[in-house]
Image 1 (cartoon, rainbow, N blue to C red):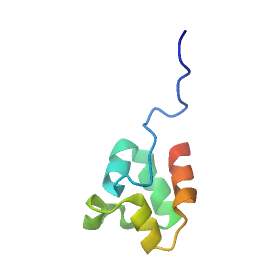
Image 2: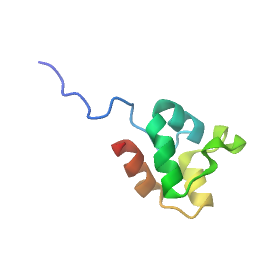
Image 3: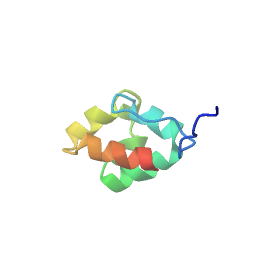
Image 4: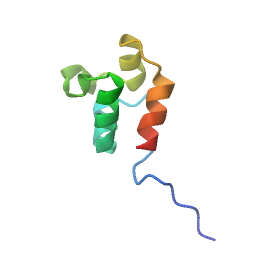
Length: 72
């Protein structure tokens, strides 16, 4: 029996993933992050900061942003 394939060809992102890794795993995530108000995707801190940390520092709901990324 074959398993069902995921809608997305990218692996699921978690709030503990580094921002730079998220963009590398799913290039469309950069657009989602930027549109959500997290414009630091090109910032040097993106290689050390998780999505959860970035959202917290910018006053954003990490679960909302994460849902948008995983739908992209």
